[in-house]
Length: 248
Ligand SMILES: Nc1ncnc2c1ncn2[C@@H]1O[C@H](COP(=O)(O)OP(=O)(O)OP(=O)(O)O)[C@@H](O)[C@H]1O
Ligand SMILES: [Mg+2]
Image: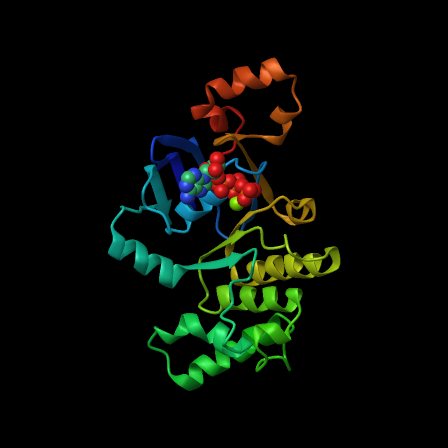
């Protein structure tokens, strides 16, 4: 469903160059929930932004349903709008809008009628457990409820792929578990693919698979437990490390 090959990303700020991704490859299959793990600064958000077609300034190739995504702005915007949903750590809801309006927002640009939209929005809000809260604004909802609005907003247009950047980082354990299970459950019933950056072991444990990044390179969890020299040796040829460890 999603494949990225040899992705290299360099940030340039004045004289300073940061190679945030140094050639990472991997794939995520349809209906899978995959955790993207790694320490702070390892490149998780950078890779998510590329996979979510929010950033097109990179080297390497990205394939969506086996179709190569050219760095064509028009096509990328179309795919992003129609096929990809986003969930962020800070929910990113529009404060002046109710839960209903926030969830309806991604559908406004589509050709659906008002009554069709209403039915979809009410149905997904019910599925995320927010029946009765539809007309509250974000500041009238708890953090967990706001994140559930964000999950509903990401899923309402039935995207093929949902990109989530640390969706449980601001939530307490109990609420995080509810949100994770919700994502998994909705993902399974709708065959939606989730790629989720996370530091949260509760999240990783509930995913089908985990991909680990370190210093802009893909590594596996097992490799992290090897003695340092062996780890170094493996990651020094790390352009292809993911092949050696069967990540693809
Ligand atoms: N806009 C930017 N300009 C310059 N450097 C950046 C930019 N965004 C990220 N970086 C650098 O790229 C590297 C990877 O950052 P990234 O945000 O992808 O890490 P992360 O794994 O998401 O970290 P965290 O867990 O803290 O969110 C870091 O060294 C970071 O400082
Ligand atoms: Mg990040």
